[in-house]
Each structure stands twice: as structure tokens, then as C-alpha cells.
Length: 178
Image (cartoon, rainbow, N blue to C red):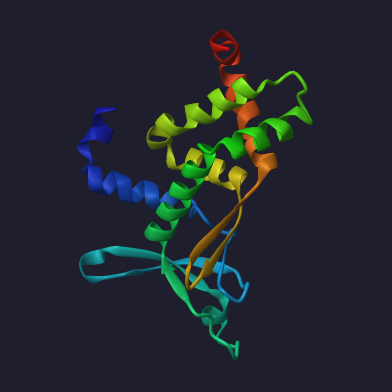
């Protein structure tokens, strides 16, 4: 542990970023429906700039370039996470998740689903990057980049899977509060 703390926090966070898969790999698409791939460049002093770039730009063969050929990774990832977190708080999502979860676990209550979804919010900032990526991949079906912004399409089956995972970790917490 002491050896880990000897390394600069900036160096440690850069190592973590470099070993964690990009959050939206395989989920993000440009305005023409083409996949966007994670990429990066290095600026002066070795500063790394991450972004997602359209396949049309990477391959260069497309006659039509997308309206937004590349987006900064940090900004779009933060926007998607913020949108997912906001959607998880909406009552319609709780009901939809409860209905989807009941298809596989008929004894799950709406209150258990609500508690499980509420449990995600305060823990999010404490999660390891790999766990955040796993949750985003469970919840997000697709991110479409448009001139007006990003449209995030969620997966209800992913929500019910996440609720089951959370309920399995603390099976008595949801029932005790109900």
C-alpha cells in the first residue's frame, strides 16, 4: 500500500484511465448512424486528449461527412452518465424497471426497485471505473450524436438486471425498509 501512495495521484489516475476501456465503446453513433470509435491524441507535455471519432472520418471513404465528426470523450461520457443518473430518478423508470424485473422475479416489489435505484446515486462517485463501465453497458443501449445534442436510449432489461444485482448484494435491506 505504501508503494502505491509513493506514486503521484496524477500518475495513478492516468494509469487507471489508460487501462479502463472507453465508457461508450460500441454504444456511440454519429448523425448518419455510423459507429464512433474511441481515439486520442497527445498535446504538448504529453497531455492526452480523448475523443470519439466517426468511422466516416477514420476510413475516409464516405462521401458525406457527419455533422459532428468527433466529440470530446470526457464531455460526452459525463453527459451520458448525467442523463442516465437523472433518468434513474424518474418515477416512470421505477415502474418500467419494476415491470421488467417481475418478468423474471415475480416476488420483487416496486419499493425494492425504488430502493435499489436510489442506492446507485450516492455510490456512483465511489465506484471503480470498470464497475461504472459495467453499469453503463447494462443500462445504455445506444447514444446518438446529433447537432441538437446526444440522445441516450436505455435498456429496461439492463435496469432489471441491475436491480437484481443490487438486491442480491443486500437482500434484507430492501425488505426491511418496506
